[in-house]
Length: 138
Image 1 (cartoon, helix red, strand yellow):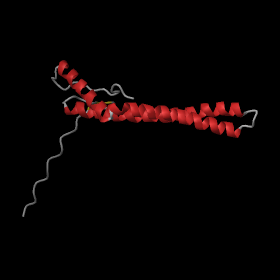
Image 2 (image 1 turned 90 degrees about the vertical axis):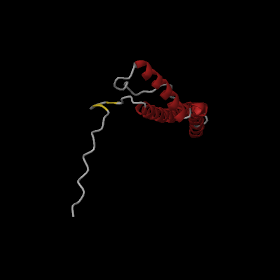
Image 3 (image 1 turned 90 degrees about the horizontal axis):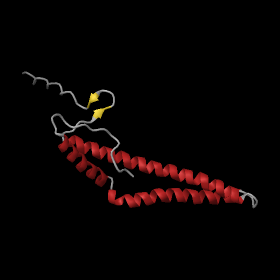
Image 4 (image 1 turned 60 degrees about the vertical axis):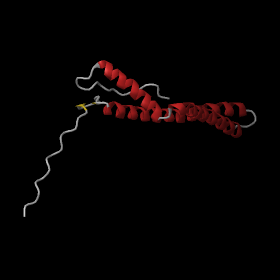
């Protein structure tokens, strides 16, 4: 589960670093709250449960498919394959939680006047909209 942002944010123009650090702490708390930090125990249990369930199901299938001589080998292989599948599902749950955390963190930091750098084109700024067309003349 996320413990810190994985995105870059820079202080806004003329913002003292101390204020930026305060923004960072506030926004980390907001991001954790928005993805349900108090519910991390439930999410962590779901991740472990996915891995264990995958291993148990894999072991049962492996034992069922193997004959009486290779049931142990089938169960072992099923456990490995099932555990791997469960671990992959756990990784997906963790990735989604990190992505949600990062989005909430960026939104908070941006709302505090900080800059979200783009990976290719420099600071995230939007051009001014074009002027409105003149009203129709009669």
